Picture 1 (tube, rainbow, N blue to C red):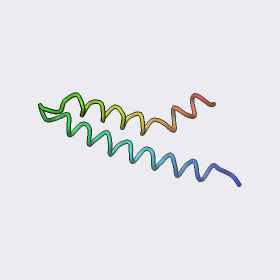
Picture 2: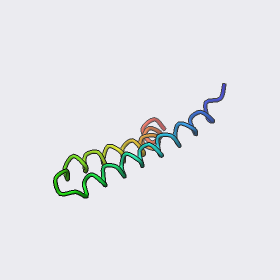
Picture 3: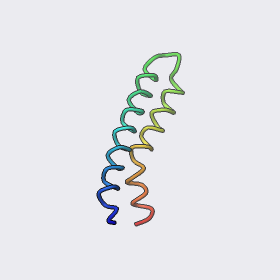
Picture 4: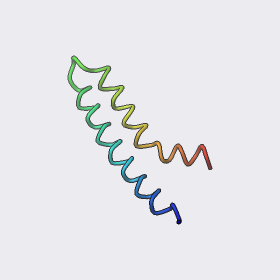
Length: 60
């Protein structure tokens, strides 16, 4: 079985979930009380969204 269609679907899922987590973290960081946790969550969301590309760069 060719894993390319499955990998493409997983890439889209990671990108969408990462963007949603990043937007949630940025929204949380917008308030003055939760700046640092919001920034950490936004960074984690960015890494989640970029993980398929980073995986391809590391293994490629």
